[in-house]
Image (cartoon, rainbow, N blue to C red):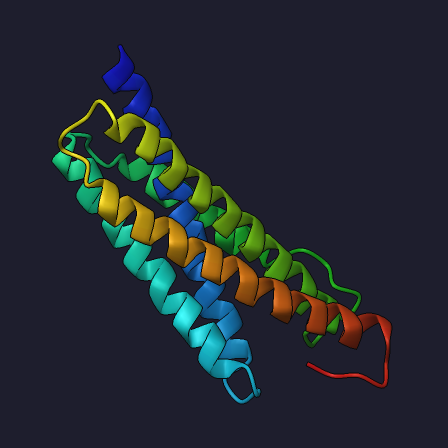
Length: 164
């Protein structure tokens, strides 16, 4: 029964990771010419690596990836793009702010899975605690970077003389 719950938990996070990769890629692409493009590309690459790590962990634990959850995460990211932003034909600064906030929330959730798996690792020899700590540290760094970018975006949106 615990294995079933763990499988559901890991697959839910896999769906979130799928959404996160799409969102991070979109943000990095939209800001490819900005001063922070390297930070955004790095975060996108790291989120993709973290998703791969999650898949490896699931494989080590014998937890199959549920395709419908992966497709659900993919579809949710596409549907999220339809949210109105106050501009009909172009992106607004508000779009960037909301996207950065959404991505930061996703990375916060990702940090929680690594923390949870550290608890599980105490009784599960197939989990590498050192690797989980590395993933958790990387998530914390992503959160810090995203917060810096989020504050810059909020400043740009709500103080017209500033820019991201």
